Length: 267
Figure 1: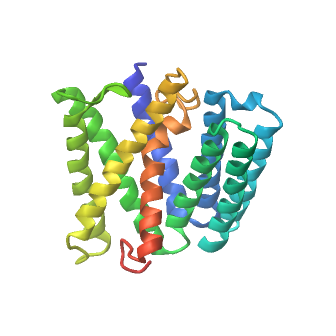
Figure 2: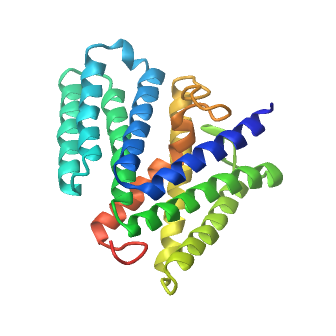
């Protein structure tokens, strides 16, 4: 079986599972978000060789568990973000005082915020379901069309020092597809919801998704790794699969939290 075939099969299986849990929402989806964050933390620490720094790495894992329990319990944004601020603040202070590697605190913050953003966007209502479906449409369209557009058209490289296979043609094609897919989801679920805000939001999220992809590629290149792990056939690790999604989710979470503006107009 070729690598592309493995990628397609894994993507279909994982996509179906994620969509099912997104539809169900509640505790099952929050558990998915927390598990995804835990996998990100594990892979980040494995790439950076942080697990060898026990008991420090173990204490940070306990800190993530505390945040994860707050997310899993369905506590409000204020409580979850307070837990995040306290735990990651302590991690940063400890790294500064002990002159430790900031990769430890960075991985904790990245993993925890990934779980918080995904769970926070979904919430418990129907508007959260539409928001996640909108986010998936934007990120997955960006990823798929950037890959195939880049392979078929080629052209100037987007960031050759970080990810030599990514091209500007792929980035532009992925963004165009994301705008079409994102608007299609919104028009289907909330007819009449339009204006310039939505295309602008999709543009920001698509760009954020691609930046997240490049960010993870930079981390792997920094540590001399091809994949974050081998958990997912054809894709590598969980970070390899959700790198763009979690950054776009963080952006959308912050935007909706700070502005009160939502995809359905009810957040």
